[in-house]
Image 1 (cartoon, one colour):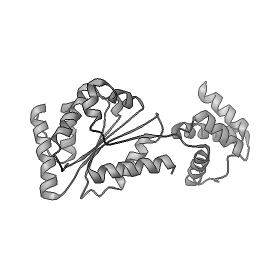
Image 2 (cartoon, rainbow, N blue to C red):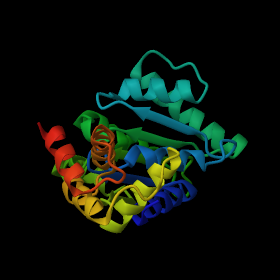
Image 3 (cartoon, rainbow, N blue to C red):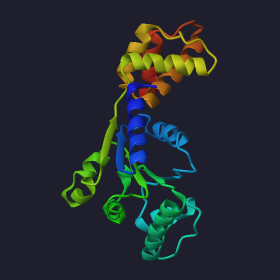
Image 4 (cartoon, helix red, strand yellow):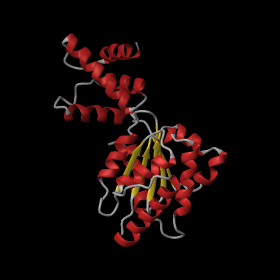
Length: 243
């Protein structure tokens, strides 16, 4: 796991333990959803039940309905009723059971201004000194630009933790490839240092792109009967992917 992955995980855990609002951003394929899954798996569901919603077209009514369903409650039909119901459920979980839900909205870069403004209501609902829940927005880099809009200043001010998931360094790319190869039952040393350098350069350290290049390299290697992935394999693989 890269240093960026570990840092992102630590920050999300802080958001959950302190019942704050946090934002995690990153490039397409940078591993945001992987971080979210790892983070969710480390939470104790008896203390921090997870509400995970991945919908870039999410509207307020859809949010309340989906969140209530995941919390085991049949939602009211009207948005205003579902909103009040959601607030009541959160407070009941906190006051009677000591549970603090962690609400994760993935693909948040696609949220409408209406939905982002609804977050302001959610934060207004939080009590002066006690919050019954934490909220995490996960999205591509443009989410940061959305939150800089003057119309969303009130929402931005309520975000306590922000982190942008960085790309892998060259060494992290090498370690990532070795780990992936070992996990698949192959030799962890099938890629020469020169090949790794080229893969890192072309992928910009983005894990999903690294995966695609490596798969294409291994297909090229098998077709040509080689033993190790070298720079020429990478060049052909990249050319094929860019075609």
